[in-house]
Image (cartoon, rainbow, N blue to C red; front, side, top):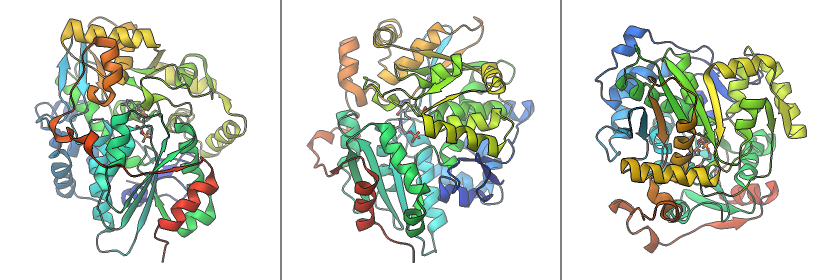
Length: 466
Ligand SMILES: Cc1ncc(COP(=O)(O)O)c(C=O)c1O
Ligand SMILES: N[C@@H](CCOP(=O)(O)O)C(=O)O
């Protein structure tokens, strides 16, 4: 499999190269040159398979030429062996139509573990026997950071510099990052929002002086391997609910558009997806883009679903490229326009293409709390604020009654205990394996959110290219 950039001017890469590279050197995001497809028979054949075997069947075409099926299987056995549930991502029924897909049984209690446990092992494999030293630069609104740190702490050949917006992640999220004291982990709280942190990371990749000096790599969903691993659970859930004979809809709490783009990839591969509901909180750039063609950046408003407090959604560029006829030059121009004015209109082709598969909704604080209470009182499920946004949108979505709707449960409720308790009166307990989180020592730096401050800090600690 070969990978091309959304902006058309970066070198074409294979799977190993794309995993190590992260962002394209033209500022674009990589995706497969062509979507692989699974026939209805092959999708039917996934029924009854374990998570690991489903993962191998779904991901094999993406790693072709780099990993054999056996090598991929062995990495998946290791990655998913760390999950606390035998089904890895179990489905839970709420009522006749509504289901939760619990994606939070990994080591750091959010859906990010599904991809990052695998990515950590891929880095290890691709670095083994080389003298390469990777400098991972990442931005987090809370969950990517802890999952990446868990996956990479103590690994040789890689340093992680993780930027989070100071005071804008939950206490559990912050401590999951800052109490990991391995020497290759460097947490940085920046003054600013997640968007500021993400812009700094992209600027580091795009700065020839900095990216020429350090072998930069990414753990955010700009890294293709992240999305590839997330495609798996759409297949895993849908075949359990009757695919390929029966279409299934998904409601996805959305911020950076990575998780829902993985659903789009599943549909492109042949999975019968009735609808992908993009559920945002009041930071609603994606809802405005999909419902009115208006992709213009607002000011980030802090909410009880902090991981979705995002106003510039990285992966939207992948969708614009794919819907716009895969024209790299046109995507580059559209993105340059956005970067200059912080606003862009979707073309008619992009709007029409998106409306075939996507619906969207914006969920405010009251509706988020209502969804938490509905799940708790009506179905005995305590859910986190992000999942609640997905569920609220799922319950309002205009879909035929016979289509099952799966809401992606993206985080464990204990990560957001205060918000859950406020809405439901129930205080979810931290799982025993991190029960002592609040007794652990924290270590992190606080920096102004400027390119000079952050790159200066990293340059003093990172290993330069030979
Ligand atoms: C708990 C949780 N839910 C939802 C999201 C949004 O996912 P995405 O950024 O892939 O759209 C995030 C952050 O990525 C998250 O951490
Ligand atoms: N919500 C995310 C933001 C980063 O998203 P990513 O999927 O691009 O890594 C987080 O928790 O950090």
